[in-house]
Length: 335
Image 1 (cartoon, rainbow, N blue to C red):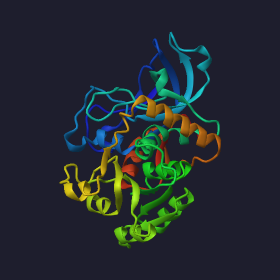
Image 2: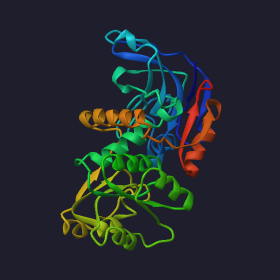
Image 3: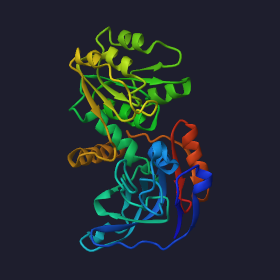
Image 4: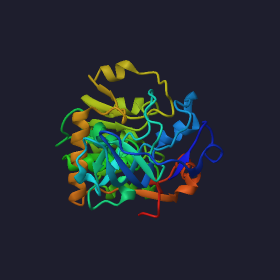
């Protein structure tokens, strides 16, 4: 099979290569998937780059934790009727703080535990399905980890991003009013199309004042936070008493100094979301919601760019530059 690999961390163009290697087989409890689309997350790019001194846990790595394709064979203990099933995959490569798997989805085939290959809704393409594992499931966990959101106001920082875009849709589907921050008019239109009540241009507006204006001074019940370190004071200022901040990243400041009493005075709940460590019950509930929204035609998966496997380095560089929509590597010419 053709696969993208790297044996050392560093710049994409220097360490990523594409070539032939032996295809895997489906062992007990495992399915063999012909991969048609491989999604790229910031975590994949950071891992390949050696972010914050991150080293290799395996001598050879096939990148990417998310993907979608078709089951072509199953191992012992797996229902044979799954052969031919369209699926999306999660945690296919590795998470933070643990070695994880060496071989991810940036290859023509992957052998993966049967429960990590989830039925893909008929209404979603393989390219769309390749973005569900980390972005959609992280969004689900961030929105619903502390219970239902019906009747609440949810503030999504970074609402046009991969996780944020899903969080807006899921919170709206859960009955919440959603306010999201954006950085330009295109992003604002993108977020409003996802169902947001209002957007705030973080580069041109006073976000704190605008949130309080939109909530008539009451503040918000929950915050889905893209950069905890950068937005500590903002979050503390707009959060209601006993509200929750669910943060899934703090890239700008990995070691933030916490304004303890700003949060403690409100009885705030601080939750840190790790998309690679979602509890099973929440994972299954998230998978169910994704399927229901997709089957109802209410799940929009934003794809900003697609690349062929041989240009995987270009795909990684696109993610590093930042852009609206997810970046997907198409394998074998599938949509």
